[in-house]
Amino acid sequence: MPDPNMPDSNDFIAGMNSDSRKSPVRVAFVTRRTSAQVKARDDGGTVMVFPEALFRGAVAIELLLLVLVVFSLFWDAPLEELANPLLTPNPAKAPWYFLGLQELLHYFPPVVAGVLIPGLVVTALIAIPYFQINIEGEGLWSRNRTLRLRMVRITLVLFILFLASFHVWVALAPTLLMVGLMLYSATERHDAGRFHRWLASKPLSFWIMSWFLLSSAVLTLIGTFFRGPGWSFVMPWSGQI
Amino acid sequence: MAATLSQQLTALRRTRVWRSVFRGGNGTSNLDRALAVQQNLFLHLSSVKVRKRSLAFRVTWFLGTLCMGALMILVATGIPLMLYYHPSVPQAYADMKDLQSVVSAGVFLRNLHRWSAHAMVLLVFAHMFKVFYRGAYRPPREFNWVVGVILLIVTLLLSYTGYLLPWDQLAFWAITVGSNLLSSVPVIGPKVRFLMLGGNTVNANALLRFYVLHCVILPLTAATFVAVHFWRIRKDGGIYPGKDHKHA
Ligand code: HEM
Image: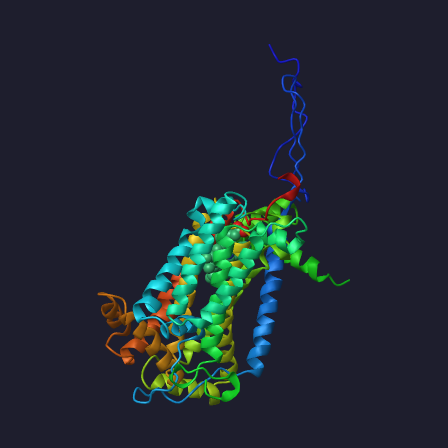
């Protein structure tokens, strides 16, 4: 016997001939057995990748090209004398993105600066998304505050002593800045401003990454602009870098 | 009455030749636009639709797109540069001089390639930090983060191998300093260095090896992993739009 609730003939056609320009909307069929609970979920909606996203991407790339073309019209790439293995320039510098490491080479033995530290950095980067603590991302001080504060303090003192014993004064400055911010974020205050609340909500990974970003930027800048003959400290305008 | 540009375009897209090249999607309906992406080998790495929120500038700063843009500029300038370059000593350096004085727009070509290379290294680092700070590395995107780390290393190697090719003092000593670091790796360091340079010092063999790495092996590796990276963005649920405050 045919179902009395169903229409006896199709009053619609489904096919690959859509002329729609709108994103389809989810429709819920509410049968008699389910209670009518429709949750509207407004996640801002979607747009078509072609043309919307692709054109935006193209515009972004065109702007980049424009900047680089203008730059290339006004600044020439360096070309020095023919390579001469017998004539070592002083200082001899690696490409800029390795100058942070070359700066570290000045303080640590080559195994540490050239192998251990870059190896640790790459391992740490790969490991980031596989640690539960980085995934939950809750504020560092949101639980076990006293215990964590004590552990952080001990670690920081040991780390600063370590840097000092190798005379890595240049890395000490960014480290101290981060330590200052970190301890400030741990203070409990009832009149906390937005900046303090923002800092206090940050997880441990935020602190480590920001410290890494700041110190590698400082090390790279010093290696690039402030190192002259024999890796001595010079001013960028001294003409010796 | 003359047809407008868009009418002519539409007419072009209706021709048999056009339709034989692009498999479907030559109208303006959503279905056609979906097919334009999904039926295209390159575009189908991407999804057909994207969340409006994740297109906002503030989410990605378009940094991933710009990494891709820099890579495209580098390929487009790198191929013509290859036409004027011999990876041999001292011809490589003479070729640089020729670019400056003989080849039309040679200086510009070299400038654009070099500055784009620096830009790409910067952009890739910036993209990595941006992804980190917006928490887009979290599951299910954790493996795409790892693919990203591989891309970071490949980018650095591309830049580093390219650095030697002009064969001037800057190139020679930068690579010497860098490759000396390798010697400090216990046990295998000196052997890896020998393999990389084809000798104990930076010499003509090293130039040839760096050339092959720079122009063939590393670009192919980069292209492969970029493809995986883009495809994983779709598979992992699209660009992470950030926390949804309204429905947390
Ligand atoms: C050649 C280098 C690279 C290219 C061309 C590239 C390209 C892109 C593009 C176009 C996106 C889309 C969203 C966005 O723009 O942020 C993206 C997302 C992503 N990238 Fe990269 N990327 C590169 C390197 C990296 C690196 C070095 C990392 C991290 C170590 C990384 C990790 C990610 C992750 C996890 C996503 C997903 C983010 C999300 O879903 O919101 N990528 N990449």
